[in-house]
Length: 145
Ligand code: DQA
Image 1 (tube, rainbow, N blue to C red):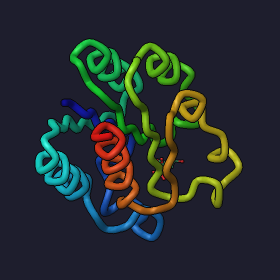
Image 2 (image 1 turned 120 degrees about the vertical axis):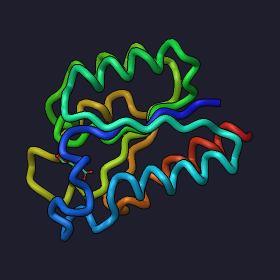
Image 3 (image 1 turned 30 degrees about the vertical axis):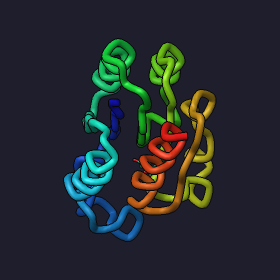
Image 4 (image 1 turned 90 degrees about the vertical axis):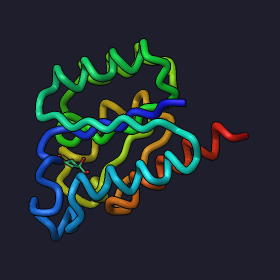
């Protein structure tokens, strides 16, 4: 019963990075909130942040082999550029939920396209950091059925 949460580049700065867009919560706050919910529901949660595309790919490969049920991923700027992350997710058999803190569709045109959405089972954007909690609850509820 494992869920992997992957945060892409610059999300280590959450809470101080453009708070008018991304809010004041830190990445630790987000991960801790998610972990509490997961543990109460009997799930193991692995959270990882990387500023490096290859490290995110390695983490997806690891999830592929360690029995991970679902990946919740905010690929950040790699959303809009990375065929390699899409390919890695295509090699993963579990559920994939894509999360964006901001509403990317309300922003610059280059943020409107997502490579990852070609693979994602669900996409959440614009709910702030609550989007991660919504994604987690969706995964847990769907698995309980
Ligand atoms: C983001 C949106 C991306 O366009 C941006 O590059 C990010 C964060 C979001 O969570 O809203 O770094 O994925």
